[in-house]
Amino acid sequence: MKKLLCLFLFLLPAAAHTQDLGGAPLPEPYINQEAHDQVIQEGCFAPGGLYWNWIASGWTLAVQGAEWIKTQGELQECLNPAEPACSDFIDGPGGKLWKPISDNTGNPVFLLPAEYARKSGCYVEASNGGLIAFCSFRTIANGNRAHFDVPMSAENLANYKPIKVWLGGECWHVEDPTLRYD
View 1 (cartoon, rainbow, N blue to C red):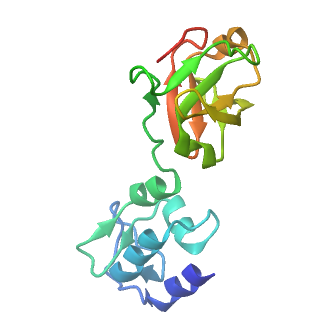
View 2 (cartoon, rainbow, N blue to C red; view 1 turned 180 degrees about the horizontal axis):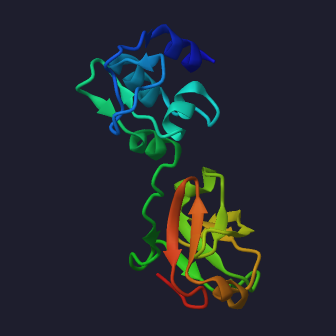
């Protein structure tokens, strides 16, 4: 609600000569540069809001004068941010580890530095982006590393390869879940 109020404080009356990139008149009112920057800095508006509707309907926004035009790309990027690049488990002895068969459960386990034990949001994702399984923290052991269990066999995970393991907004790429990566 704060963002919506902020947006309305900066609305300007549309100038008769203001046009989008295709030459069509912009909808009224249009947003000024300061308000646009504040909206982008504070975060995205959910679909259905006034700002979103302007962009989604294909209009460009004239901000602080007709010479500066905002296109729909910036808001789309804000609403659909690029996925972070995934690293891998290959960092040498005593580091991160993907193990296809845990000594304790027989299912895959992965090990990360101990500070990862406090992170939430652990899941495994298929190559197409679909959720495969939620994983869970087990313990800190074996070189002071946090251990996370995946409740599915490596053979079953291989049906979705390559997979991604997510924890706390970070991800790790596993090309073949049936192989060890260290």
